[in-house]
Length: 173
Image (cartoon, rainbow, N blue to C red; front, side):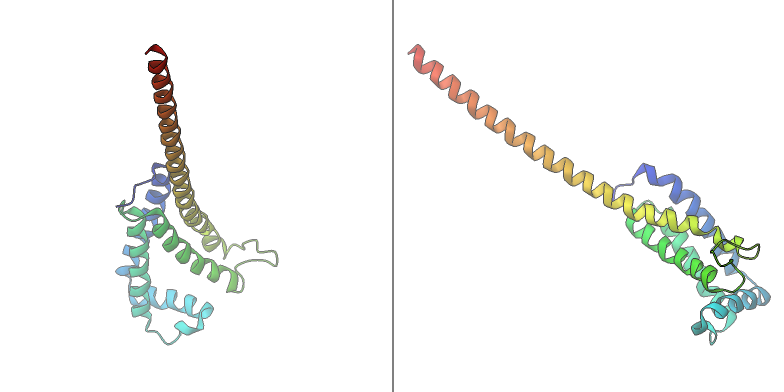
């Protein structure tokens, strides 16, 4: 079981609860909600056009529930949770970047684009979770290396002390 980095807890709790709630709300969405969300997504991602809107909404809800749950589950590593969040948020940002009217020519959000543009925070958190996990592993590796060096130094010191003690006994004899 991976150890939980306490510095990740606030990020994972806030983001996980937000996404899980969104997924649970979509799970019980009606036909009108399904058609609206599907139409928006299919306009940006044409491969979704052939998908049935209620099926799309259930799949989207299941994805959000999975990502939110992964973030909230302490037994899921920060790296795995971060990768899931990064992928999810990249899809949302794709909507922002590819949908006309969401941003001006300099990628600043329009009023229509603000609800999606703000989701860039999820990409930042996902990336931080992935990178933080790598940093944590590097720190553990460095700590193990330092501990090994200390053990070797202790062994050399013990050997030197034994030689000194042996010479002192030889001189006393």
